[in-house]
Image 1: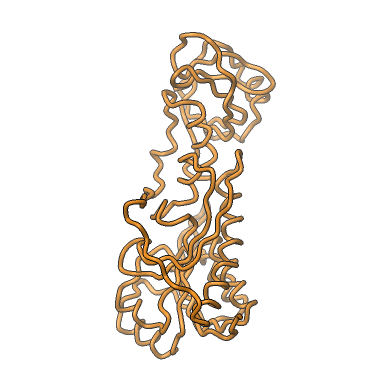
Image 2: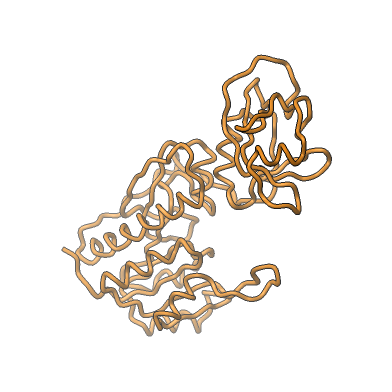
Length: 316
């Protein structure tokens, strides 16, 4: 049975961390402190903006801190003074020092949006899609000194839809994770959850997303490029060059094979459905939404009319 009133600190930063904070409060937990990253420059004018978790915490009048460092004696003393049962971490974005991990009675519970030990690291949602995984999920684990290496508490699985993009999957996993964290705290308080060590032989580590991941490699198979288009949305996106100018590709689908020996990146056909382009190993992709640098996004039919794209041209 669920035991209300577990006293916790909550550590989180981006939008995906908001549902769990709200779920913990709705479940009756005592959120004694919200810890988030410092405000960061945002938008066209680079004005300082609070993280989404801080905005919610302020709206709910929760005690909030945004320290530059977590390992200071001042911060550790503040946590100890709260007499915490547990701490919950969701996409906080920073490793937590061992001296901090030892403070709560039940430890630090981390929510990770993957089926650990697969896709440890900073970008598990995007890389689950990019890797062609048929399913993913959420895991709760006890934090240790490593990166996503602590023992697993609970997991939930979900299929990845064929055309699901990172923002859509992130919303689903955020909601799933919120429910799982509430269930995890209940089980820990009741003593009914046994942590299970991860198998390092099954572990994979995701790289941090970088702008280089957005450059389209037309020698890749069309199905790989289609996954990358969905995975790297909204950032770094997918981009290439056309007529010497940068082009962002917001929509890319796999087309039926077409015989021919055209070089990769060649435009094979143009229609209302999109621009057919030769990809690696003889595969074909259809570009369905494009954006010339400095211009607005356009469906392929409008882009074709505006740019007068013709078969035989080339994307690089």
